[in-house]
Length: 425
Image 1 (tube, rainbow, N blue to C red):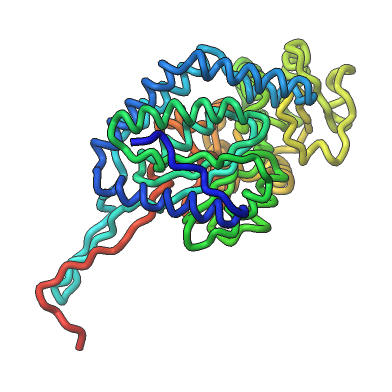
Image 2: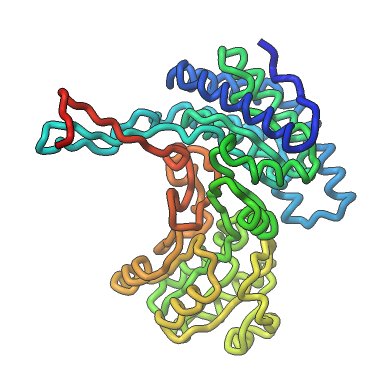
């Protein structure tokens, strides 16, 4: 079996249609092979990523050189960079998906009607999923693994920043899948960086079953505006940590520092710190962040806490920095914190630090975000940390799936009705 189908020729719509048809045929084959074969394919793909490590890192070095020449930000370069440890983590994440319970065929519920009909809802794959993403090459492996693990086929379109890395990762994974007897076209990478192909994916209703965008605000906005295919959106992470008056000072410093500075370029990074006006250790909290190398931009009361804090603009409260920059506001209690989050948040991840359990429970109940945390760093907003294996993104909408989207989030369901000859009167 060849590693991939020949690249079809023609205009963008024809190319995407041909790739989609090949993907749908591969997905039908996956359904016949069953879960154990899919799991074996994932384990083989993980081994192939390790075996192909030198080629993948060499390809990534080309992308890093090009990215530096293009003037990519430090945060973007951090997202792009691969090293042996990160590549090992990517392979481990693929293997971990193989170890997760298979959602396909899971019975969600079962009821028996008075007329004897037995009704059940059963999880099934969505079909062919298109993933459009930007600079993170790990998405190539994560998305492929999650689609395969949930019985779907994947059509991937990565960003130009990671083009060499994506191709190397894709080639290694497909080699592993083919070795395990899975169809090569179960995971396809769009062979060109032509932006017109993105438009063709977005309008391929009827052949692509769902689009998942992963990237910056402009990418997601374009997908949502132009798509004729259902979209599972991952919006920007304007994440807040609210340090309540009853916060433990040691926890507040540790959580805030980790939430902002562990990795500034991830979507779970804190972008705004809200400090209760009655919190007694405010100066120490901001000093700890400043001393760790974080630039702070604050409102008037925050600026009064430390002369090193710069005045914030209106735009700062709505900015995902993805850098060692943090906006800080002093708020008058829980209601003011909730109002600020409702006005400026992106419904991604928000956290409270407090020892007052009643306040914590109200925060957890009233903040309308996909992930709401108490006494924990927002950097735990990750499918792996939630025990879901790799994730395809953090869905911030309210329909279908919300929060880290892993295997279950990439399935839908169908009704099975079993009768004994009933007819409707």
